[in-house]
Image 1 (cartoon, one colour):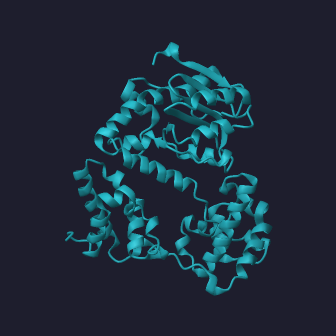
Image 2 (cartoon, rainbow, N blue to C red):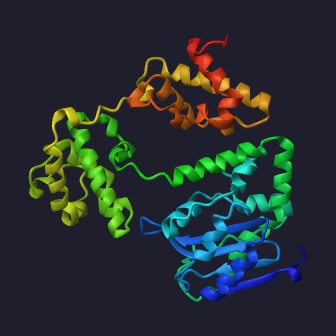
Image 3 (tube, rainbow, N blue to C red):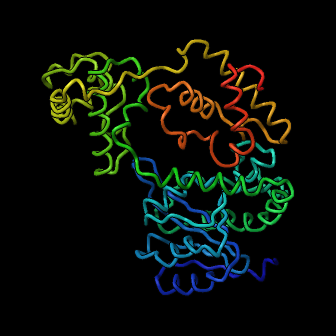
Length: 387
């Protein structure tokens, strides 16, 4: 692709967007990226959409265009491969902006991980590896919702899809040659499913640090407070910590004060949280107090306190390392520490995790085919040598 053959567009009205998307609808591959701001909000604020198909490179202005439906239709067109790099936050943008769940999308960062480049290779490092071009990333922290965008910002945004489109065929060919293309596709699909799975508001309390220290009554308080905080954050579009800090929720759950005045004397509570949300949190605690004991959450069991956990974890990690060597993959591709712990929690039926095997990454998809059954046999054999 020669530079002078590339048509560059800045799209800032619906008619131009419709025309562009009509031309892009026959593409085989689209390189896609987003620019957004998420400094003082719960949800990302979309500032720019970038797309390139080798003939057209377009920057789409969502600040100027209210209806982006033609672009969302491209993302859900199963006939077009969409390639993005490190797409986790982009998926959140698509979800929040239009509840648009992409189809036939692949993440080039995931692709690179199956080529031995680790799980978090940056875009600039990937482009430099394939092209020798050193990208300017100085605009990565800019406010993409402000207008007008500077020439430097526009150049930065264009580079994010131009080079991605150019290197994608090489990455794809290498991945096909390695035999791991379908696994990379599956990893991307699983990432999309996770991002588009609704938040379980009744289990948010488990994500709060040190919640395992609480007894059943205190956990019930925390459950109600964590759910209230998330609901309030959604309505006001604020980060969770802007509504109330984790330490405040923990302290209130432990002490369960009966008045706003009593809250101010509890160690660990943020004074501003009490000033702004004291009455609301007191009302939540009263709701939690009305719950019968049989409906309290079960006490959280720490996996690392399970008898022999450290030795068992080490044996499973070594088992996976051996599989990685024979499959020419990095061990972190097969299972992260979190995924190993997920398997062990399921296997030992800790915190109710022993019921849903679908929630265990190691026992699904390509991982299960590669080593899942052997790992289960290894566990059944007492985490010794597999039979």
